[in-house]
Image (cartoon, rainbow, N blue to C red):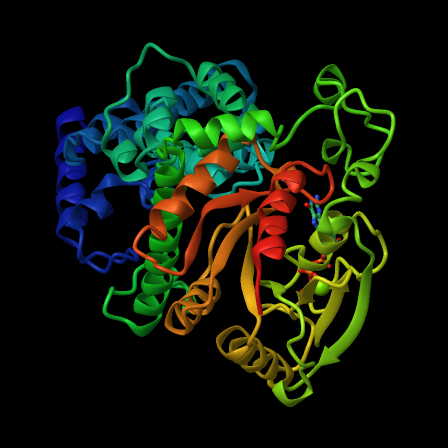
Amino acid sequence: MSADALRFKLNKKLKVGASRPNNSKNGGKNTQSSHSGIEDGGKGKSKLGLKDKNSHTGQEGIDAKRKLRPMSSDRTRKRIYANQETDKELVSYKKKTLSGKERKRVVKDDSVKGKNSNASSRSMWVSGKLDDGASESKRSSRKVKNAVKNAQVSDTTWAKEVARNKSVKVNNGDTNLSKKHSRSKFGPSKGLDEKPSPSVSVSNSAKKNLRDRKSPDEDIEGEQPKKKSKRVIRIDPYDISNKRLDDGIAIFESTKEKKRDLEEKADISKNAQFREIQPSPSILSFVEDNLLGRRRLIELQRAGYNTELSAPLDNIPFSTSTERERIEENVFRNKLTFFAAAKVSSSFPPPDLPEIAFAGKSNVGKSSLLNALTRQWGVVRTSDKPGLTQTINFFTLGSKLSLVDLPGYGFAYAKEEVKDAWVELVKEYVSTRVGLKRVCVLIDTKWGMKPTDLQLIDLMERAQTKYQIVLTKTDLVFPIDVARRATQIEESLKAHKSVVQPVMMVSSKSGAGIRSLRTVLTKIARFAKL
Ligand SMILES: Nc1nc2c(ncn2[C@@H]2O[C@H](COP(=O)(O)OP(=O)(O)OP(=O)(O)O)[C@@H](O)[C@H]2O)c(=O)[nH]1
Ligand SMILES: [Mg+2]
């Protein structure tokens, strides 16, 4: 047959083969697959080889096959063809070089090989492609795992963040995570949207991660905004600082405080008023002449008084003997003798002698003054405990005068009924006693007159009993205050009719003013008539 005839037959066969129904696995869905030769390639080749022994799988058949196969843009097909061509070239080379039997064996082997090699090459290529993809995904997952493992940060959120950034890197095929990571600390969602910068490598980002990991707590503390703690106001139920003024407690407290303030102000004003008193010159000179008030011993010694004697100021200056010897001629030189004590008015002794009584508050120094006037210490009992004298005690001073020691009024260590009885007894005595020539109302120089003193004075004013104010314990206050007190009392009693002026000032301890008082009282005894 000529070459043209052979080409004709071959074309015809090929046409018949092309129009034949597809037996491939695709089942005709893809008509190209039957022609593509991925699965038919070997078969077609063997068929051609078997049917056309002379062709020896010649170049014509291959060209025809190429013509029948549609051109595809798929690279896989092109690669298969390339492999096939190289295989064919090898086969043809072996056929040319080898002898008959060997050539046949080679052809068989090659035909078998061709099937397998195509399949294997194809499978290898496909698997290689799949392997590449799988290995890449495995690598990425391994990187993520390593990143998470290396991180080992206590803060799980931070580790998750790193892993997320890594996964983003893998997904995007990007190597830069530094910016993402740094920003993802503040907002991970933002980090995913960030576009990576290609200039930074993975190693740099890992280093930065490690650097950041050194002080995660610091970052958390430093960068996390501090939550504002809510202020809790605790109300103390016992706190009355927020109570209104109309509350009972507040009123009670305020009234108490007001009273206290008023009392303090009154005291202050009283003291201020007292300091403003200007004593008269006669009183001031009397205080200075008698060395009344608080004095230093050196001052008494310079004045010539023997401080070793009792009541030194009651002695004559520069005198070696006591005043007792000099007053022997006077009434007060007589012996002081106790002769009666009365708790009630019915118990009063008969009024045979003119009487001088000593009244005043408890502990003011009544009994002490009796001893100082007569210089007979210990005849009349004294005590620093108020309320010692509880009866009206009658003393005779010679045969011409009687001295009466009255119980004190005001504060005393005694029952109220007893004290009331004392007051009533004293009131009755000073208002009804026949022969009472003078009542010495003793006032403590320091404290001045008290309401009880004024009550007694009012009573004697009504009874027209002569009374004279005697300031006691003058040695306990400054001389000027002695003068002020005397002036104050004189001013307050100016309107009184029964009062005998002047106010006497004495000190039973120092003896100051005793002689002056003795002189005044001696005149009473001398001129007193029953
Ligand atoms: N510093 C000083 N103390 C005095 C003075 N007169 C009396 N005393 C003291 O005052 C205290 C009371 O003296 P009394 O004489 O007991 O007073 P009283 O007024 O009789 O007292 P009753 O009997 O309780 O009413 C005593 O401790 C005396 O030593 C004085 O002039 N100066
Ligand atoms: Mg007394």
